[in-house]
Image 1: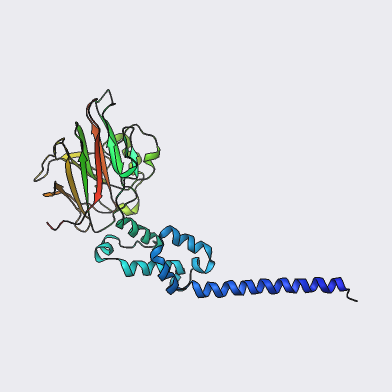
Image 2: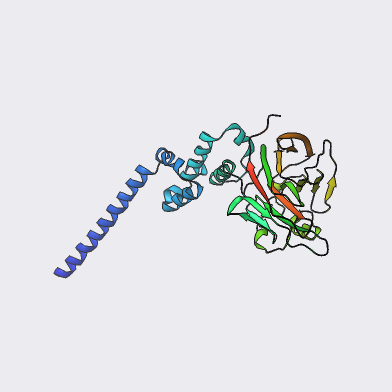
Length: 319
């Protein structure tokens, strides 16, 4: 015969299962009601990519692949891009094969945000008052053998893959620093190595730099290309043999403050230089694949004042 305690225990188990079933049903109803495309699209403009990823982690339904081999969050990211992307942004950000929509949305957010120097390489370079768009270099120490110390700042998180991109490098202060402004292949982790100095021209680093090559670099052998403020030369290379070449309409910038503008056109494969808003001309062609903005300072002497460089994204010039 069944005892009273056994009946009570069986009843408790039934109640627990019932409560658990009710919770699962309630959770499923809430999940289905709240987390659909329309609701997510309504709240998505208030979220960034990291928050979308966190949202996907809160629910299997949000993060798991559904129709079209995309999760609900991925579909929302795709629709956010489709609804807000301008023609210029679409040209600049073609989607790679296998690239997630959330990753592409992240790149779109970066394209719309202020440029920042994400890596500082060298012992005489630092941010100005914590502003990652402005760096300062000084000449109170230098290589005794050469009389030069090279420091480099790279916008390594702001990667340009296609389309047109314009930026300005504004120099404030005056001493005998020689600045180089331009583009280089995206490289990561160099700012954490603790190098005392670094430049793209230094052959000691070329083998390691070449080893970072990816398919996204494309077929061009122009792995870096920079305008020399001192005399206006085009300094470029494939990280085997650096070259310093004259070019048509070349014009030096000197050692005083001013603004250097650069237009990277990855549709035409050209890099055009502007001096204080005036177009000098196309400095280099044959560029393709991914690049990011970069600057190198060659500190020529052991004395002098600090000099600041500010980087800003600009509108594409019409002439």
